[in-house]
Amino acid sequence: MQSFLDIPHHSDFTIHNIPFGVYSKDGHFSACTRVGDTIIDLNQCAHTRIFDGLSLPKGIFNKSTLNDFISLGKQTTTAVRKLIQEALNIGGFLDNDIFKGTSVFIPNDQVQMVLPIHIGDYTDFYSSKEHATNVGIMFRDPANALLPNWLHLPVGYHGRASSIVVSGTEIKRPSGQTMVDGADKPSFGPSKQLDFELEMGFVIGKNTQLGETISTHDAEDYIFGLMLFNDWSARDIQKWEYVPLGPFLAKNFASTISPWIVTLEALESFRVAGPTQDPEVLPYLQYEGDKNYDIHLSVDIVTAQGDSKRVSTSNFKYMYWNMCQQLAHHTVNGCNMRVGDLLASGTISGPTPDAYGSMLEICWKGTKPVQMPDGTERKFILDGDTVAMRGWCEKDGIRIGFGACDGKVIG
Ligand code: CA
Image (cartoon, rainbow, N blue to C red; front, top):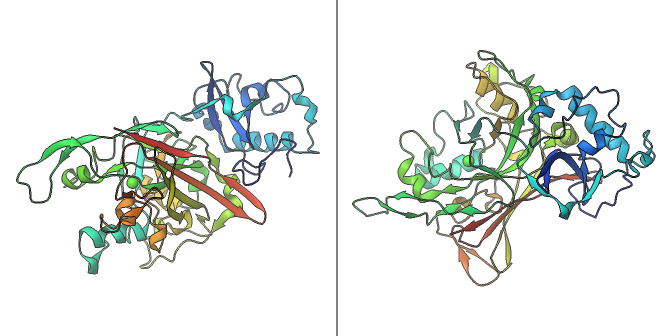
């Protein structure tokens, strides 16, 4: 496939990607996709004849979220994606002249990407063995870094959907209670240990009923697509508050997502085998086939002056528990899923220090500061810093990516 639209070298948005998002311009919203640096307005596309035969509900793309579109089901959303590819492909079966005189194409810099889904519920897992091991070594017992349940189930908790924001939204440094080492009482103030967590999130594409379970075999039918996810974390607040019920105000002040939902179909050729799971997991968590994805991930810290430092280079393929297992576990008790729910992976750390997915690990509890190009150092994120996450797949000359997942911290 080759599009007649211009695609810059190394673009995330090749004809092989065709992710879904929502843009805003002059107070109006529309579902869209992107090829190269061109936004393709799907509402305007629907006014041409390219989706004829799909019987799409009128105005399905003329909305501020993708929930209704996703609810049409994979058969329809996959067909829409294929038709867009065909329409933008040189020599495809659709006549490219179909777009002449329309306002389907808009330069990327003329629109504002917005949160593409209404997120009903958000769950965060803790599924990287390397991350869980690092945290266990730092805060508990190096000889028994993983807690007894960790190798038997994908540990998770229910997060907060209201504070999930799209890339580009400024992040206000949270204030809260902390207990400084050696102090006899807690103090209150802005977090001094603001951190990121490099994660990926997946969007639920199909409802289940209360009491229904999803098997690992069927789980992919319920996954619409993936995005980058930064689970901002205030480590000093977390350390004091988390016992005995887990994360609360240290996590729920903000999480940043990339604006594009990359479909499972686009990721199909980047499947890889996951790590061997030992001990053997219970039958409801067993699975067949390759359920991990080779997605390169990076994190840069960019100072207010524009000096940039790459602090992590990881990969989604390192996940010990895959998305199908997470979904099977989440629903094994009958918990229902709804279209637009977001399930995040947990911090994605790799086997080597350059692949760690949080400052907590990269700087090993503050003992190994990162040297920035301007001569300053970082143990955590400072006001004015932007945390910039990227994710992309590349194989046999085909590249697809997730776009930007950026957040600037303000005081
Ligand atoms: Ca997390």
